[in-house]
Length: 372
Image (cartoon, rainbow, N blue to C red):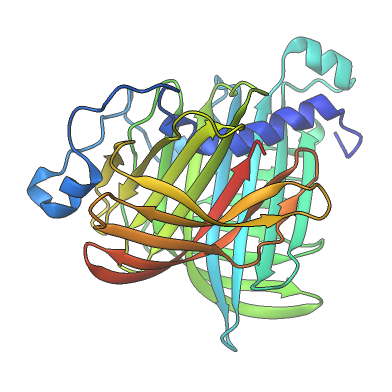
């Protein structure tokens, strides 16, 4: 399947990409007051930490890096901050999406016999600069896209993500984009455990935090050696419902103390009702803790209005706990990062500053604003 793919199929792909990375974080629209620990007590005493509820089935690696054919949708995502030899910082986001097709969809869309479609998207940008973007999609037919379980390789045309075999002396993930707008070859290494926060079954999710990255990227014809750190997550399960009146604000925060925080906020588009906040923390020791929705506040602090769509986006945020044990300011690298490929939303890298447990921290991350 090339660029002539019909709109409804790609809409489903984009909705799944926007929603499922944090689908397991969502709580009911009108939640009751939570019972148990809050983020404040988490920070106050290590003895009070409440481990996340185990997933229904234990994950197995490297098997679970691959495709889960029973699920209707699946995403693999890398978020990284890279540094060139001259000290210039670059943001990377690379995502593979798999969508399972029904028999009816397969017959309507193509004469090829294929039960699923794969999409790849990649963006690289420097602060204040326009992103370099790469996007391709294809059915798995004729070997144009798919997953090779023997070689642990995920690909769409020439773009591929390869997973290591678990040997700590070898790469954990390798990403290759040999041509196009932003060619690159990057290897990601880790000595940390896989983080498996609690999820709302049947959604499954895991993450790798603080992955060391090295390799090269090519920008405007210049091949640059880079190094840095990255965050990887993999989500699979049923497709989320499309439409509705909700906006969702999603954040991945990688902090200088070695921790990472993933947050999601859902609220009504008209601003009525109380926002629902949820998320989890990956601590420096790789323990994963859930965040209660009344224990964390996610507040918009400044806005940007798109001249193209007229949409007003909350692009600066304050993330805090009621007693200020977490107090983080989130700002975009560039506020002009509205995307209009199919669905109009905002997505891009963010800088983080503030305090965690009374100690200064900085950080890097990714923010996605959908439904506006």
